[in-house]
Length: 141
Image (cartoon, rainbow, N blue to C red; front, top):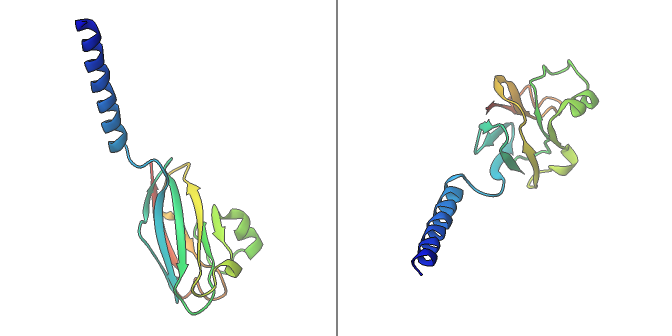
């Protein structure tokens, strides 16, 4: 009888510790990141990310004109055509999907670190980037 009771106590403690460890390790789903586009800038609830963590990016256009958003390495305007940039982007929401007032989302998990200056959210529609519509981000190990 003592052996059964001892096993039940040990099992209960094990389950309680496992539940605590699971709660401390973070949430089970992706981390939601809220990004706001206006005329002409991006604001994000996070700008530093971790490799291997799934993120859900919710992008809202609060501006008066359509925008796009690219998760991309910085590119000087005019140095590459849009088709090349689209291929290079890690993630992208097209201009047609982000008119004024719209909210669109994408999911992304970083697979490698990107130090400061190597990755950004950007709108490369004509003149938007030049007016400041880009936001540098950092991805840490």
